[in-house]
Each structure stands twice: as structure tokens, then as C-alpha cells.
Image 1 (cartoon, rainbow, N blue to C red):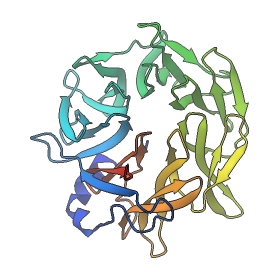
Image 2 (cartoon, rainbow, N blue to C red; image 1 turned 30 degrees about the vertical axis):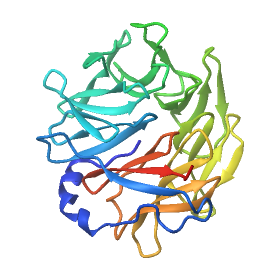
Image 3 (cartoon, one colour; image 1 turned 90 degrees about the horizontal axis):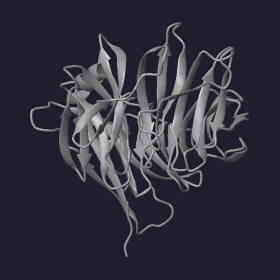
Image 4 (cartoon, rainbow, N blue to C red; image 1 turned 90 degrees about the vertical axis):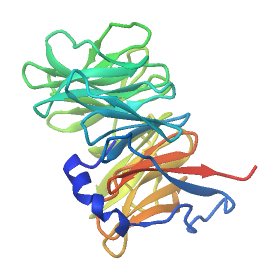
Length: 332
């Protein structure tokens, strides 16, 4: 999940009005009666600005704000979750129960993996022999994945399974080869898409029974994973393209436009930003590889954060310094 840096958010707050926002734009080629409706997510009282990092079915959106604490929105209503023991907290994901996960920061370094549920933050256990941890993704079952920092500055994928509270597992396809292992995501079936970095970057799918399959994706740029759909960017023939693969690593489709850091839902929808002919950028939506809608445009790059997407028709992003959602709806 990509988001704008806080300094950039503050610096671009005054530029929000220069953005051309086009909710439910008339670029839709199919389902002409269906529309995207734009809404602003207000920051909690007392906060100057906020940003979006995650969204989930049921109207949940998570992010952060100007005071360094977490923010959770439910059906557009903001809740300031605050800091953790005085430390800044970054929320990285949220599920359909409103449970959010992330990490605390001390002196700009991540310190503890945390989970927010039942009205409070709780630290997740750090694996033995590791210095710190961060939680990066959670599914609806409550399984949490992230990374843990070892004594030798190596990062190992970490799993906190919902079925065994208090348990923490570390996962590395080959510790002799890979020094940085992290999750792209975990889906509702409990499958984890793993990025393993060493002399080269490889990807693996770990199944709930512990077995792993190595994928030959031919790229380092993978950002989307849900319901077995894998999305990323590939550079070949002197240009970038956006590709979707299945769990075997076979190409399912190539998008008709390069989508930067694409995200996917469980069906056929993809969202991402793309470059416009005049040097700006836009937030786009693709159905089965064909771009069907442009939700927002900016005259220059860097002011649209990477979107997050849900299965019930929500795309959330940060435009300048304004958290924003777009809801897809069709006539009954």
C-alpha cells in the first residue's frame, strides 16, 4: 500500500484545489448506468490533515494524521485512535471487523507490531532472537503478517495466526539465500504472497498447510494480492506494463494502460495511478484489463497516493492532503 510521505502531505495541502476531480467520470465504457460517487473523509477533530493506507469491506478505512496517531473511519465517520504509549503509530491494514494493524515508531525506526481491537492497541509478540517487528496485513479471519528485524539486520516474514493467539511464526523460504523476506499480502483463504530478496528478488505463495510454491513472475514489482489474483508491473521492450498472474505464476492478462502499483479486488477490478499524456497523473479503474473509469486527475505527479480497494465497491486514496473515497453503485 503506497501512501504519500507526511512532509509531502503537508506541503501539498494548499494545492488540493488545483486538482481536477472527476467522480463517476464519463469515461466508463460498460455498465453506463453505474457510477462512482466521491466523498471526502474528514480528519478527526483537532487534526489538520490525514491520509489513507488501507480499506476493508463494510465501510472501514484506516490511515494516519497530523498528530502521529492512527485514524479509523467507519462509513465516513472518523475516529482518532491516538498514539501508542506516546509513540507515533503507522497503520498498514484493516479488516472487515474494523481490526487494524501496524507498527509504532521511535526515532523514525519501527519498534513494535501492534493491533487495534476492542478499543485499544496491543503489542504483538516479537519472535525470539529478533529486535523489532511490524504488522503489515490482516485478513478477515484475523491472521496477521508482517516482518521482524533480526540481529544481523535481516528481515524475516512473520505470521501471527488467529487460531493460536500469542503464537508467532517466522518464515523464510531459504535463510541462506534471502536476507529480506516480507509479505505482499494475505488473502481470505490464508495464502501469503511472499517477496524474498537476496541476490535477486523471488516470489512465493505460502499455503495454510505450510507448503510453498515459487513463482516465476519475471519482475520485482508486485503490489496487489487478493483471492489468488496477483498484480504488478513488468519492464520489457523498453516500457512498463501492468500484469496480472494466477497462483501458478501464469499471466492472466495485461492491462491496456500501465497502472502504477496496482491493487486488485477478489473479482476482475484493478485500481492504480497512471501517467497522462500532458505529464500529469490520474487514478484509474480497470475491469478485466480494460480501463473503464478515471476517478481523479492531477496536472503533475506526486499528488495522488496509491489507492486501496475493497470487494464491496470502495476505492480510497489521498488527494493532496485530503483522504477521499469513491463508491461504485448501480441502479437496482
